[in-house]
Image (tube, rainbow, N blue to C red; front, side):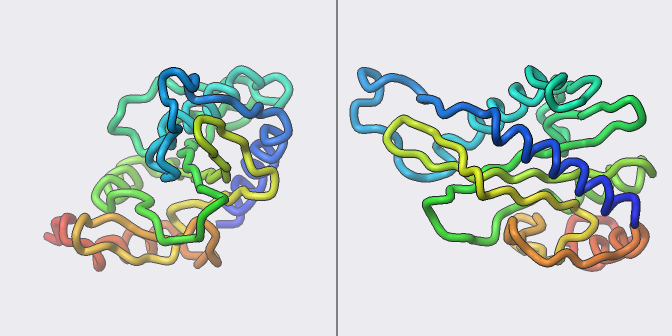
Length: 195
């Protein structure tokens, strides 16, 4: 558990450095979207997540990383793997609209988390949520908004409609062992076979 806390702090330091590098950018030009995008995170989240992930790889030397691999299948819980000389970190990028309010968000499907954590004893997904502002077609990163957390320490609330863990990106962690985490997932899910 202590190692995982250290891993979270290390990843947070990497993405704080990246925030100082990330440029503002336009999604497209005003000829294509003359009225801009609807101010809704879903309008831009996948694209912004790609910018963050690819900029992490592009700036890996400045960030002190050995490699960043982002060629993951769509079914993966993580968007990229950050590699240092000593370790690999499984990272899932999230985006928060800093111009809006904090809401509970779908974090991950319980069944996928359970399967990955029970099959791979070294797997820990670390979520990095970065804040953005967007107006019309322009995206600007919020230098004051970053939330870094792990699934294992999430407050567990499972949305019964989609069997996904929901949480605020900024929350108080609930420290628990991997075994406790798997037990709580099992107890709160409809999709995990309890036999």
